[in-house]
Amino acid sequence: MAGGATSGGNAVTDTYKEARNWLLLPAWGTLGIMVLAPVLLMLVYSFLTKEFRGGVIWEFSLAAYDQFFFDRGLFGDDPAKIEWTYIAIFWRSIWQAGAATVLSLLIGFPTAYFIATRPEKQRVIWVFLITIPYWVNLLIRTVSMRFLLRDEGPLNSFLMTTGLVDSPIHMINTNFAVQVGLFYSYLPFMVLPIYAAVERYNFTLSEAAADLYANKWITLRHIVLPAVKPGVVAGCILVFVPSLGSFLAPDLLGGAKNFMIGSLIEEQFKGNAGNWPFGAAASMILLTMVLIILVIYARAQARSDKEAG
Amino acid sequence: MTRQRYDIKSYPGFLQITLLCLFVLYAPLIVVAVYSLNASASIAVWEGFSFRWYVDVFTGPESAKFKTAARNSFVIAIIAASVATAIATLAATAMVRGGKFRLRAWSFGLISLPLMVPEIVTAVATLIFFNSIGFDRGLLTILLAHIAFCIPFAYLPISARMQGIEDSYEQAAQDLYATKRQAFTKILLPLMLPGIISGFLLAFIISLDDFIITNFVKGAGVETLPTAIFGAVKQGIKPNIMAISTMLLGFSVLMVLISYLVSRTDKTS
Image (cartoon, one colour):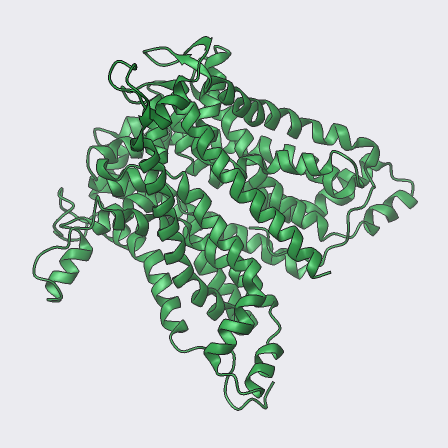
């Protein structure tokens, strides 16, 4: 990891000014060709006509977006009604990602706060413990969660042997399992930025509040929380955005009934549905949503930076 | 801060929540590691301690498949991380030591692009791209895609480290008639080494872990460890999968430890 060297460094210098274009060329080339151009091409594909066994015919068409939003009956000549199927899938994804974000915040904030208020030497160890799972393969973590939550899995057998429940709780292939899976996947992303913000927080402010007879929780609500808000917002975005387009958690923990955007897109390129322009259009809609969130965030960030001077 | 009437910093319940947090993070991994040592062929019952599933991974009926997948994964991860680290190091030098220039913000945006675009969208876009230029899907397509999305992960620790290094060393070298190239290779690069190692390890792990993009751009029959594991899990979680997962898990933890030790030597210097 970055080792926390981001702050306190010296400003940008111009030692290698003459060479900078050459130094950047490999990065421009690779990312331009392998990421930027493909995304633009995907935008083009979303306006093409589908080829039935995957791929496209190079003919302009709005069919992909039309299919996403409107239902025109079996033969396509009924009056257009709103098609709720895909909107519902997107809505469920937003809801699931939101629930996972709230869950991560509820657990992540106290954790980050607790770690940031430890003595300095202990902090490193706590942060280390939080980051290790991030390094472990996401697929393996999701599979572990699936194993743990099964009807006859270790969690249920534990609950039953301790007599907490009589019959296994059905958790796998539910919305709950997906939320837990997303929460579990991205929790470190919530903890780390909040931790960084609380670590910078000036605790004399809390002291001042205490001197003025504010109780702890009022201090937390009205003094600490506003001060560390940028970290909280960053954490929420870092959990929400990848959750929104996630594929593994809904696929392995949610089953067929708990479809999310990621599965919808994947199906267009893998399964028998095989509609590339539709998959490209769904990807564009997802990308647009994410970019809107990021732009709003960047604007808010710029504004608060300005206010802070 | 000794004159407080009570500890204003601590809140009741936060310790418990932190422990719960760690429990949630580790319990599934520990459970899988424990069950990988189960002698039973069924994952549901515990029949005693055994390494048989580890032996099975290397010699069992599916061992050939897993060996090929593991070799693919490691070869791709090593090449992708090396190339990405080299590209990121050059880019970081331009961004941190290249003065202020018009394309700087755009360059940073381009480098961060793989972090902003949802992975599934990158996967779709890359598949469409390879398909439209008639590039046959196989190991090479996986490698190219991995190099691209590993760049930002290598870039972040490298540029962070470079921002922490004062440029006075390079200035001093140039005052003593070193060329810029010498100042870069003899002074800046050695100082950058901890950051470069961190960047490489992060890129390496990211490549090794990737499932979604690989799954889209791999050719038929070409598997990496994550896609092979995913395919197997779809048939049901078997004990040998838990053994592989545990090994991969152990490997990741080893990588973090190395990265941690590198960054520690970094502080003492």
